[in-house]
Image (cartoon, rainbow, N blue to C red):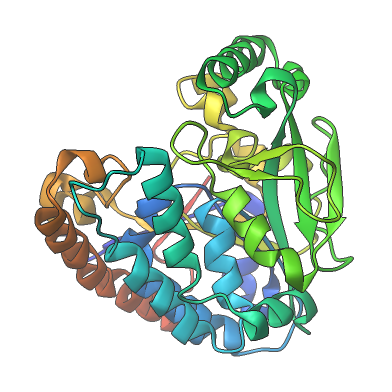
Length: 355
């Protein structure tokens, strides 16, 4: 295996900042968390290092923008004990199990599993910390369905999703006819100014943290979603990744750097854009972004040559999935160790690729 399990990609401005000032945590004023479900387990020990050590070395303010599992990870960072919370989240997610003879519908089973996972680290104290944290301003990105896309009925929802996908082929702005971005925001510090289509900001309060997090990760058809969240526009709320899968950096307005622990080398705008190569963020939009991701040689070393993903639930038995996922979590120590070496090197950009 390569001696560089961690790939680091930096925009031009970010590269210059690292070159001149090194890996100074205070230079990172935004943290970005993509959708990706089980993929976050592939970064397990890197997240533990970032949340429990690197980002704790200063007391500077940061904006945390996350959709789906990205918002859950950031909730752990804004908790009273970030290292303990991210570890609990990882452990619960890994250990999801259900009876194959469970009489409930698949949607009911997935809903209960997600609630079990989130209740492992979200409680009243944590919710209050997320809303009132002195350093970390949490932004939980969700998607509110409009028209047929705001229904739970499979036929209506399927039609609404299809119409959204067709409109999105023409323009992401047309997607706004089917979905609205709703951001539950803990404070006034914003490093994304969402201008691509209509966005509604809701003040994040402790009593809705759990609902907002569940909404942000509610995949249509697979989960029930959340309806009429208190303080937010009436309607049905779905996975934030529908609109902000990896985020559209045309909206990024931060003068500092954005740190982006990511699952791959593509920064795709929305979920419907996965098969549309022209909907990747161009290098100039990532000018102030530093992406940390598993290298190709590291992935080749893993079982199945990939980090965990949601398809593993259907493709593997409980025992095989948990064994494979645990292997991926354990292996991710190499990513954390590689990052520690990078930030201590005399040449801070020796292992950094410039966009």
